[in-house]
Image (cartoon, rainbow, N blue to C red; front, top):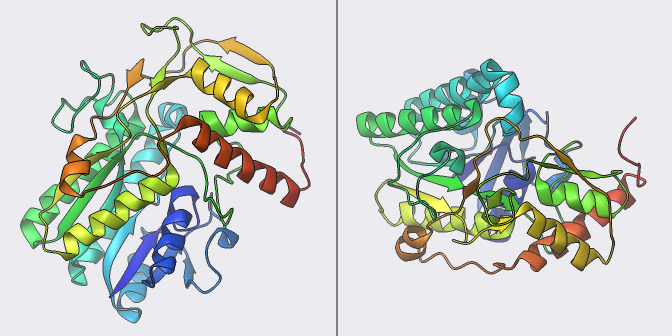
Length: 334
């Protein structure tokens, strides 16, 4: 069996490729490298540079490497960008996923794991939010992922494909061995931006909205270490290989931190103060979203290893220092 990882050069995808390689799995990657990096993956992993919308390429890769399972990461992920340019998100996240599913069905792929998002819930009425909550995305990003969930469900029912949908909450941290991490220039993830600011790679950090209906007025999010998220994918794969049913799971720890709490943690762990500016709310940002993760813990026996904000920040900081050294510590901006 060979596993095709789409977007394997990206932040989460590269961690997945390393984990699969560590486990002795046969892995092949398709990535257009628009935001990913060849250097983020093991040198021995075959990489095909291209889009998952290229059905001829995907067909060739699947048949040449006897692919039986797909883990689909390739996507656009920035909520404000999706509000500004929704059509690109529907193309990259939904239309391209449809093309990938077309080839998966045609070539007899057995198992499909899809990286979805907590953004499908929008601003939930109840927190923590469970998988059965109302789905009401507030952004084209969330809608584009929900559309793919629906497609996957319908395709599975029609063609017998078995799948797991994993709804990510806020992913952060880095590989503890510093083999890969969040490397995208201009990334908008809060912990990455705060760590860059602590290292002097950005002049300041902006907080988007301090008037939310939360204890300190800033948004609350459930931050999950990327390595624990990858473990959830491995557990999902084992579930499908064992004959498990198609399922949807939240991927979070079940508790959240506010923006102020995250910034305080970065200052504490780094031992550095930095400038914080206040800005208006961003469109598409819910006030608070935290996972009810009881289902994945029970059904997949998923057990997180890094459920600690300071640990997540420590690993993110170590990676950012490594990245700065590699790139010559170029400061943010022109």
